[in-house]
Image (cartoon, rainbow, N blue to C red; front, side, top):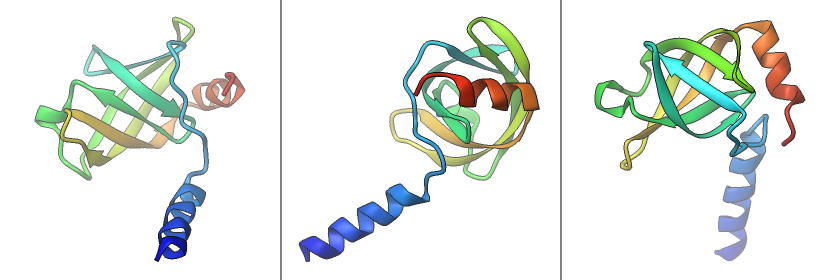
Length: 107
């Protein structure tokens, strides 16, 4: 049983393309609102502040700032809504400069 659980969790971890990072270098603005960023990766992010109007599968659009500099717009799809009011979203489209800057930040 223990081996089965370990294999289940290791497979889940392997599905991630990028490591999640907790950093103040990245800011997410959605509908001109600066949201509290829980974590981010070049593949997506988790934020507090939009859960009351969010549903899994909803497409959202916003801007990404890295080191207080605007790096472009993105669209993302909400993939999970948490009980604590946060949501996880996967980037659907992201400005190439923003993606490049995210991959170059320390992880």
